[in-house]
Length: 283
Image 1 (cartoon, rainbow, N blue to C red):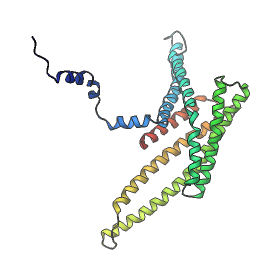
Image 2 (tube, one colour):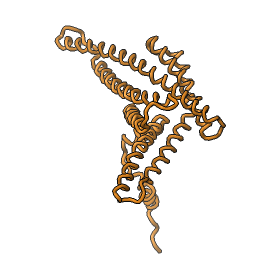
Image 3 (cartoon, helix red, strand yellow):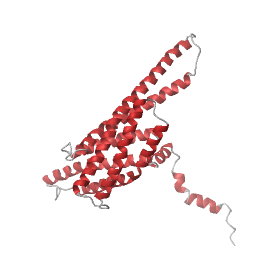
Image 4 (cartoon, one colour):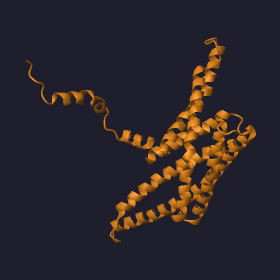
C-alpha cells in the first residue's frame, strides 16, 4: 500500500498550476497605472480615439499602396481589403464612442452646480466656465438626437439630421473657443504663482547668507515642481485645443471647410495623441 501524499501536495500543485499565470506576471507600477487609466471612461475614450484616428490615417495610405502595386502589375485589384477592414473598425469605434457619451450630460450638470457653490478663483474664469458648461449643455442633446436619427431609432428628415450634426458641432466649437480664454487665465495665474516662488527663491539665498530667518523652503521647491507639471499639462491642453479648432470649423459648416477629409483625420490623430499623453501623465 502506497504511503499517503504529504498534506502540502495538493496546495503545492494548485499553486503551481492555477497560480502559475499570476506568478509569471511581475508586479508593475505601469500595469497598475494602466489599469487605473483605462478603468476610467476618460482614459478608455482617449485610447479608442487614438486607435480610431490612427486607423483613419492608415486607410488612404493603404489604398495608395494598393493602387501603386496595381499600376505596377503586382496585384489584381487597386483596392486594399485591409483598408476596408480598418474603415469598418474605425466606424465601429466612432459609433461606440458616441454611444458612450450618452451620460456625458451628467458631469456637465454636476459642473454647473459645483461652480456656483465653489466658484473659480476669479470672476473671468467663472464667466468663461458658465458659458462653456451651457455650450456643452446644448451639445450633448443635439448629438444624442443625431445618434438616434442616424440609427433610425427616431426618424428625422435627412436635412434635419444634418442640421442636428452641424449645430452640435457649433456648440462644441463655442466650448473650444472659450477654452482658449480659459487657458489664458490659467497661464496668468500660473505665472503669478511662479513669480511669488521666484521671490521666495531670492529670499532663500539671503537666508543662506544669514540675512533672514529661514522658512519652509522644502515645501516651496515641491510646489514649484508641481507648477512645472501643471504648466506642461496646460501646454498639452492648449495643443489639443489648437488641433480641435480646425475640426470644429470643418464640422460646423454644412459643406465642411477642408476639401481633404484626411487632413481632418490628421488633426483628430494629433488631438488623440496629445489627449492620451496628458491623461496618462495625470494618472
